[in-house]
Image (tube, rainbow over all chains, first blue to last red):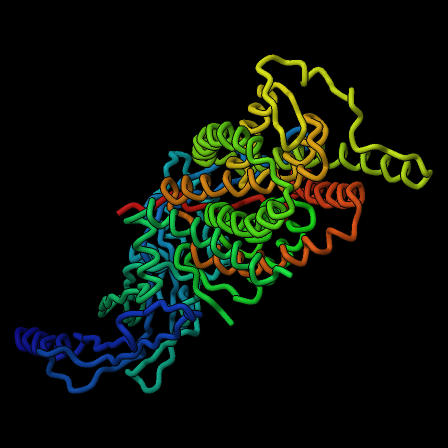
Length: 253
Length: 308
């Protein structure tokens, strides 16, 4: 009997390290530069699942599922609802969401509900609805309704999205994913989180940051509008007066 | 060809911007109005944030009105004395309007006030102008000679105290109605994001009896000065003036305004006023419908700031 236990323990000791996988991943670009002709940018995420440094196994065994979430800088957003009062449609109700992402996309290698359960997906903020929990109302039902509508509106704008075939496995443990950042992607710091799932549980994760920023003339204009507003306004007015005057001179007959 | 707008933070087709600037500029040259009441809704409809649209259009209105005001000035059609009174009181109104704008935006009722404001203002001005201009057109067709101004065609407004002589307009009237008109247009203009030329023109014609040759030039000069001040207010307060967006609209607008001004010479005063009335009414009806018709989406969203 004792021998059997020892054998079992020895077997476990052999099996356990083999389950320790790590994720090696890379982004195609660590900054997206907004120039005057910026019309969105295509990004590629790729990586492979390898045995952990201390593991005895030389190979990892799947099947693995990969989920990548890309989250943009947070904002304060409100969702408003119009109702019909006395023949006129008015905004009568609004819910404010703190720390709401200005951009959120999910890429996955299968249907999210097939990869894991709702609890795991929500606690790791993989589902878009997980970001609507910081509402300024105590009414849970209202915050759920407005949160869902806000996600829908953001999806219509192309700022939110779930692509359940966004991650492709090129081999058993090597994946790649493509994302097109839209031209209205807000500038700021972005975070790409990659989760590796096996049998519904997260076995490895990694986060990488990238930034979307204005460069050159666009950056100069955006900065001066904030730092030198009076001068900026004056230049605007002078430019307008000059353009108007020039138009008059050019077309004078 | 796409161009990225650094303040609006999105990219828009360059030719679309210059195109709508040109089309609205043509109308502004034709009627002597700034065109803001057309351009602002057009930009919002094409995805530009409302605050950026309102602030940038004020810059475009300056440019579009400058060329018009200068060409009227060369023809001697600007009463600078009268315009100065209108501008000074208008600035006071604009400061009040910007303050009310901020309060309404916080409460989420800005859209409603803008829609109702446009409906009431454009609707009433449009109807009044349409009635007057069609009457004038009918009289002209019947062959009745209508003199531009009768010597004793004064109303009670002209009898108020503090009378000032405006030589260019051949008027000797109280400054009180002039100041009230300026104050009102400054307030409404900054609240609704419009130049207010379409209110100014009928106010000068029907309330102050400014001669027709002076109306459009004086109104344009007032719009240039008022909108220049409002652009500065927006740049300092909301920092939402997109100079690139404004410039694209300006280029189209100034070119369009020149063609509009020359096209205006082929039309008579009452015909111009009739056309402007129809245009103003169309915009009013569009805003009215937006209040009554069931919206395609009862939910809407807005950004209320960035929290670190």
